[in-house]
View 1 (cartoon, one colour):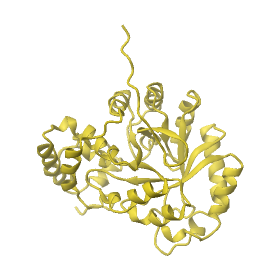
View 2 (view 1 turned 120 degrees about the vertical axis):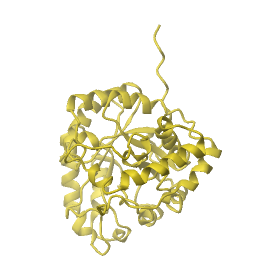
View 3 (view 1 turned 90 degrees about the horizontal axis):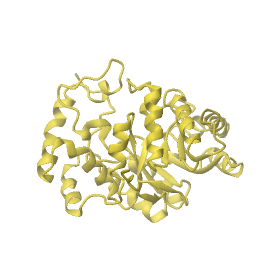
View 4 (view 1 turned 180 degrees about the vertical axis):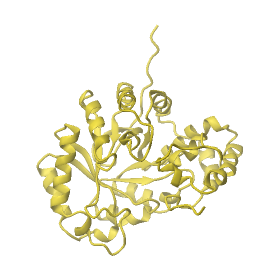
Length: 332
């Protein structure tokens, strides 16, 4: 007797007309540069399992392994017509994150936007990118430069379907003007149990303006999986050695135990609880999760049932907001 596959809940991506799986596939880790240990055959198996189970939204970027992630995503997406692919253009000036006072023309001149989109299309092996995004953003760029002309031309030529921005780490308010001005159709933002700052202004602005919300880092780079302990070690060269540097792994533990105590859950339930917390907000269209193994794909896709988290649990988690920026190097 065949076990029926779960039905993955699909939600509107703002006003784009696209219906996206509420659990999306985040393809940074399979770029195999900053996250160590990824093997292409395993990555492709995980991608194809996600799509076979009914997932339909993959987010990648030209900057993930210098295009390597895009090539893998394209291999899988071409086998599953209807897959919605989002990618991102790295800034021409190589500046991460976008700094105040730097003009738009230095980061995203029109010719760069067009050339990089065409290069991504070639790596993906696709005729069109469903959602093209800038990989950094500053609200001061509204009305600056010629990047909007490039976006308009790419849409006219059928090379992209929709345009959005990936917001600088922990700067959700630095996109509210873009949302309210109607120049973006989607935003990608860090939002999780610890970083609840998008709830302050951004998510309400997106709801009011029909902008789709793509959530990244819903598990705080692994903190909220419950798998990282004070003694966890990462491979040499893995960027998480910086993110969890200094005393941060030990500093994390009482925060996790407090969540478990408040909600009456154990460590194995942290990841599901954290994903459901983010999906419970009406503004959120999809949560992109890094899944380099079939096991993780199957576990996370099972959460995509449209149920979110009970309102009482959501309210309890508000108290666990923890404002900090671990992308800054830790002091040893």
